[in-house]
Image (cartoon, rainbow, N blue to C red):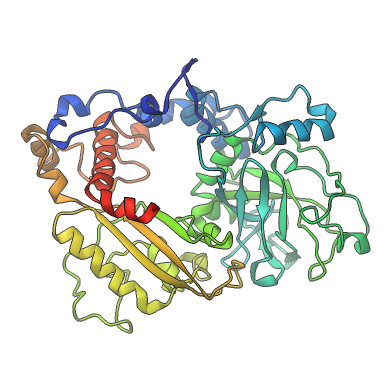
Length: 476
């Protein structure tokens, strides 16, 4: 979206992503070559970067610092001080309205990439408090706007004191308004605007030509590095329940709600903790449905392989058990199967009829059994969802690319690679569904090896090429 340089030089999209591959040419010697720049950072040692910063920066900044250097620095995108804007025109307008930013560095998306780019985070709780499934709110970050576009279920959120905080020995829950709209991203993280209750219900930033002044973000703006750090911090929800966790803490920023007639203000800014958007929705689909998307390519990086022993034939809508069938929750929760998820974070995610999941899973299982990549085109009726602010009564076309074993691809690999795939000490023990942490032990906690990255990338390419006509028809 932003990358046009790598290690100090200009880079083309072709070089960024690497050359096309042919399965029969993917010997172990080829797979062990350095990956294309887009994925090269995954093979550098994450632990080394962590050790460089741990104990030297505040715990709530640690993850963002590490991610900035590990994933983004080689592309010159790792600054936590650089703000974002949607275009050069937007940047010029921002600077004209805020002369103090004239010397500020801006990151602007490439003009040859899609115009809408959403990074999903989870808006947890005020510092010292904890959220649950009904009070964790999506945080959506784009180069132009950041915030939460609605009030979840049009209600306020209630937070309990976190274990170990100064509030934990009392029953002083807090109920606050969260979300309701967006703030320009360059300004997110500053003090709330100064106006009275009557004005607050009328002056909505996205609906008025008059500019509303807010405080300068402190100590850092919502940079790309900060956003990627927030969206990748998977432990966020668990850490949110503990006030003191030692060296690693949730990213923090100042935030406040957008008032409206239904949720009048003002409400002062609070310092909140934020975490991975996957705490609420790993797919990113719900943010697209909020925006009225009619066609969606859904790349579902599953956490486990679909069961080969589950009886899909005799199952019915009433008896189907997605957990027993090992259907990834990012898929099953959209069909109303998120009710029993951990702490209830996924219980509000239903946007499709429950009866539509089993036929879809049967298609995926059939493709897997045939050795083909699990890619399916489906049309689904969208159900209204007040918690996410999603309007129903329409149809969305989805091209689902589900991460799964593709034996047809594996059968085309050279003999030495096939031997490595099935050997006792194989680097591909969990292929193609690698562990997100600890795949290669504690010595590189979140990294992968070159051959692991390259083989997975090659299967992804094969999946698209194998279903090329399906993709062409979808985008016509």
